[in-house]
Length: 113
Image (cartoon, rainbow, N blue to C red; front, side, top):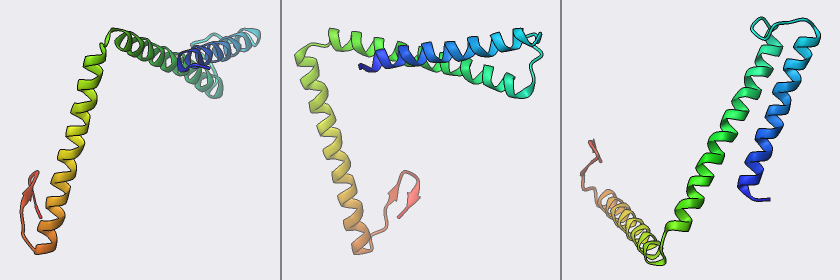
């Protein structure tokens, strides 16, 4: 199952939970604004679950569109940039290890080492 389909399924499940809570409250003659704590929490969690699933679905759809629009050249450029960033981070880390081993104190991001 795709991530998008999984998020849609989560949304349906949370919607069913929300409907279940509201139906139970209606059967008991309770108004949705005056629920006992446990039911109010169940309703809030279901609503939150729906919202989170909608948010994740939107993110996945945007990512899907970006992937469709990205050219092979842009993909290679992004991978190359990521590799260069990784190499630069490794180089800084290596220098810090050497400086530390040699007892050389340097200032890194506002902290004296």
